[in-house]
Length: 254
Ligand code: SAH
Image (tube, rainbow, N blue to C red; front, side, top):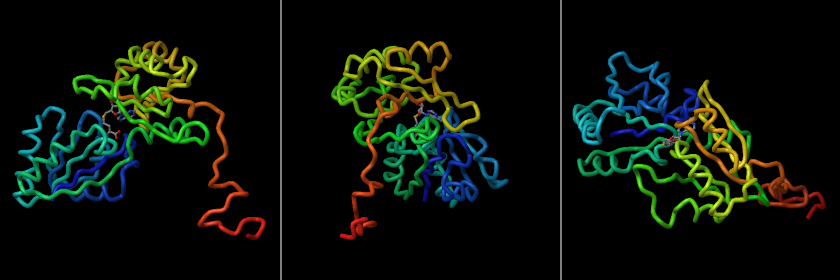
């Protein structure tokens, strides 16, 4: 059995209890060195072998994992945030299946959730947006034509863009071209939940310049949408005139 573990966004307390326990029990640990906080590896077994996958190919990672499992070692593959987002985890699962090795995924707190917490905002505001689009601009990995930034921007939903802060100028230009008004609020969260976290707030029009001035080029998310603003409707969930399954006796006793 191999455990794919979401390590969370950075703060070592933002991993699940289950993920933490499995790392502590592991004999072999392969972690994504570029983004996983090394503090998460501070309480591992003295005999554990640790590999940083940053300098390894898929083939090398799979060799280490498969050999460890065959030798009866408890093996964990630690990914940043949640493995299901830009984790390159599916290709590893496919290889394990080919090798007849079972695996389990332990979810993690994705960086886009840590970013909302740092911004102290709710992505889905009534009357503003009820949809969150998680995406990226094409880099070395391409993005399907129908998912180009302009096409997604047309919805003017809440958008969180991964892996793209290095191209912030082009990104903001395309967000506006696609449909966001120039004064739509936008923010960049750099290293959410780490001690060196930074937030830059602005509009789709002026964000790129602010971010470039701050020298932020990687490990950041770009969030766009009116959810960052101050106007919204109250939710029906806590509306005193609105009853639901858990509160079906309204004030008027129906
Ligand atoms: N699986 C991860 C994403 C991996 S892709 C997750 O769920 O968060 C790596 C990208 O994620 C980075 O380029 C950056 O855009 C974003 N990212 C990861 N950790 C971050 C953090 N602590 N703060 C801001 N962005 C982060």
